[in-house]
Image (cartoon, rainbow, N blue to C red; front, side, top):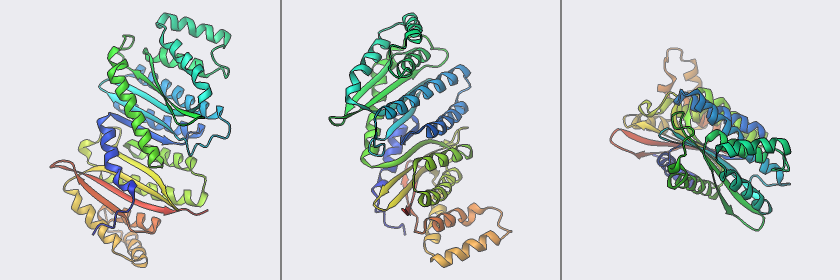
Length: 383
């Protein structure tokens, strides 16, 4: 029997996955941004993009704009002294609609800096490509657009590299801070240089609105980290590095990392290959804090016929005591005749041992052939 589902985070897994799929999200990260974490995010996103498009110039434009967008987040963080990044986490998202890519960022800014920032953006958006090129040369010479030297030039380059206007929005939070959302539309090689009126009107605003709504929901649920995209062995290590950079509790971080490895492997092992791509298995993974526990939740699509098999293994593992589970695990490891550890429930046994609690799970029917499979466990915070 499925363990009691007491965590609210469990209930939002599928709605979040649906929202992200419907809004064409390919990659979403919500959490704390440091220079080290942004490197890992860039590697993850770039690896996935390079597997789904062969257009080299498009890949380079996307990568450059990702770099500038992430630097924009960290710049604004650095500008605010003693900023509580736990309270005001940022967001980075990639959406793909047809051959268009949307790169969106959201980060906190001080209210007093908004007029100057808005003036920069409006100035950039008012210029045609030739005027923008000339303006860029002038800023390189004078540096007058930004007191810090980089922010204004970065925005100019984002507009130049994309060939489109910069879509932006401000959402005031209180008397001190506002969330600044920025989106850049990047067309494919064929359409580059042409004015994309569709992307800059209804579709662009709809896309940016979906990012803002998703960010708000994640903030309301106090998600420490959220990742949506394609999972494979290559990006597993980068995700682990992000976790280690995201948390500052050594003992808890080690245990969370160990549990996370098993949960990500679970997505890769059981994901329905019919909905996978060369970039990996589509899924969602997020962490949230509830009291003294870090809740880890994963979700991915599986074949209908896999439901009973997975459920049986989970029930078997959940039904054992700690000592029984330890003995069973050791027996599997010493059974050299077992060709496929996946058939023995070794991963589930390992996951339960590392988390030291029963595994929660749920299956949600998608269609006649597929189920959405949610798995959750927790780690107790240790100082």
